[in-house]
Amino acid sequence: MTGLHAIKKEIVEIGRRIYNRGYAAANDGNISVRLDSERIVITPTGVSKGFMDPDSMVICSLEGKSLTRNACPSSEIKMHLTVYANRPEIQSVVHAHPPYATAFGITGIPLTQAMLPEVIMTLGGIPLVEYGTPGTDALSRPLIPYIKDHDAFLMQNHGALTIGNDLSTAYYRMETLEHFAHIAFISHLLGKIHTLPGPEVSKLLDIRRKQGGTGVFHPTACNSAAADACAILETGETVVESAITGASGPKPQEISEHFIAELVRKLLRELS
Image (cartoon, rainbow, N blue to C red; front, side):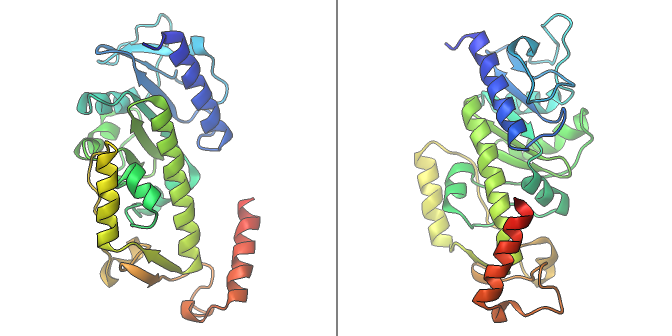
């Protein structure tokens, strides 16, 4: 069994990665690991994830009581405890505010489009969880209907949450979630998106199940009535309104290769 000090060091390293990647600013975010059937270790409140040390980690009971003298756990510990209570096999929880995933949560667009096979196999569906006040039961309660069937969550107006059978898996799922959100954002701006057909999605879910993945994935099925909330309209090649071109710009089907190249260069300059 991995020693407690080694687990604390791993949390510090993951915190540093989260901070350096811009997934959390200032003291945002929180990380926890289940130690046994009665305890977890979690990041302290009010400490930047990029500047933690192993001795600052807080051990708590599964009821949320601090077992570390003169130490206060993250104010959002209830969210972590809700996950552990509903998923006995889960050993780690990571919460952060990755910019692109957080932006999808703010705009109310769930990342449930069948776009990338790796995302379907790794994460399955990524639901949008209703907003709740941080640090209260109102943040945890909306998670409960989704916990058993998902491993990654968009928190409305509050970042993202990923879980795993170990800390590395929980963290890498956060990376995958943000990478997917980034790609979905750029694809939406370009104005044309190819989604995967149903039979291909089924194959990918079969692979996910064979690899031990669980949960459900229902690709977003949008129509004209829901177009404002969906980046994808139909399976296959889809043209969506581009925020770059606007109503007075060229229609998506009339966009030339030169225009696409210029648009990509502009996006890369803005994102660099």
